[in-house]
Amino acid sequence: MTVSVELTNHADPLICRQCRGLCCQAHAGLWLVPERFLRLFRLPRPASPSELQSQLPAQVVLKDLDGVAVPAPSEDQNGCVFLTATGCTLPERYRPGQCLLLQPVLETLIDGEIKCELKPEGSTARARQNWSNFWAVGRP
Picture 1 (cartoon, rainbow, N blue to C red):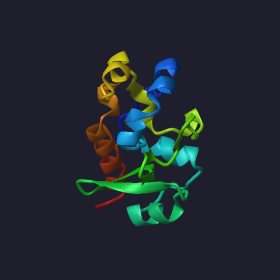
Picture 2: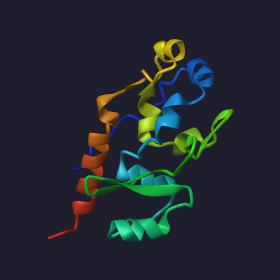
Picture 3: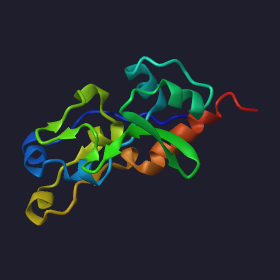
């Protein structure tokens, strides 16, 4: 069973703007809930990760999390491909659940190190669990 999360962006726009995407530079976030991902990108339910891979938008990849395929934005030398000097170019409603659940922390600006917090429901372990369950549906 997939665990849903409340995908409300609690970001402080002022801190995020000043931070210039330190979190996004570290790595792109993951889409946590398979059904939400498919709905957002108007994709049919794939039978396998390889089928999903063939349907993905150009700037989205499948990351392998210990054998479980989970979609995430592509990355380049600056981190997430949607990150620009003016912030994220991906409309908020399409952003990965991890991005939406990230909580900016002022110390990130002060120290220059990523100290933002991610709620437990936005963890990589949760994304892996949700997608593992999704891929297991329909298997013997």
